[in-house]
Length: 367
Image (cartoon, rainbow, N blue to C red; front, side, top):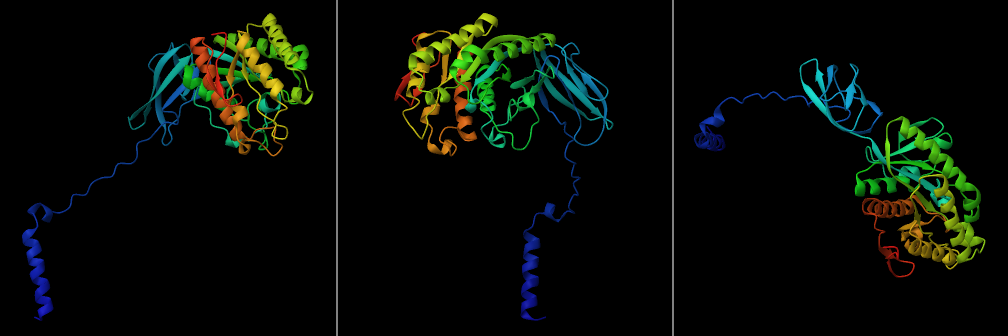
């Protein structure tokens, strides 16, 4: 035996002597369990009258069962129908006897929001860059189809025509998420915004579209058994009026007339106003409109200012034309507007916020 071989035998013997006896036992072969079968929806928020189908991601279900049929029923094929407000557990049993459950929360109360204004309230953004709306946070009322659909971008296009890849995004999704974070109450929304419109047109003509949309939407909600807690019009407009050199006093007069006309024919409570931004090509051109909007919200209790951020956004949040916002800009505006609107809906106290246009803190005189 050569020296190297003898050395290796010695090392091996030493290791065997030092190893615990348990380490010398044959290894136990453990059975790796397959990943548990999961449901397509582990939890779901619904409005009364809404439905969805519960499925296993893998395998087949043997049965479905509702813990409270007065809140929600479930068919043999997993179709869940929301019946009345409350919480319920839908249990799915597999053919192997395993059980999985989905927590369902059913509500029958919403806040109704009408988005109105001109181009920056329409589809000027990029829908793919808008945030996804949280489950159960917001719905779009499809007036022509007489039904509700979960709100998603491009908001408003489903109502007006075919959704395409080029359909633009809005601030509605960011607004909806922020509002829901504050209130826990879902919104039902519809869009009546029109690009290139003046405040005079809104006070004399286009307010009628808001009235018609509101009346149709309320019928749909009533038929579905859904109650409305608050009714607001969210208004974002003024670029055309700056171009037309309308005076501060004239703009304020038309803005108040628009809401007076709306309130005379609907139960809309307030106009929640998103203040105009800036024209990067002519930085002072929007001053008169911004002043009119600010003064109106400070002095008239029927108006609530919910966003000042538009006038403080950097150039990167604007499109090349210097007037329209990118989707990133719309997301920021929508988030602030939704947060402030939600705070107001909860408390009835008009919100205060930093005001980059006037370099101060905006506070309404109506508080």
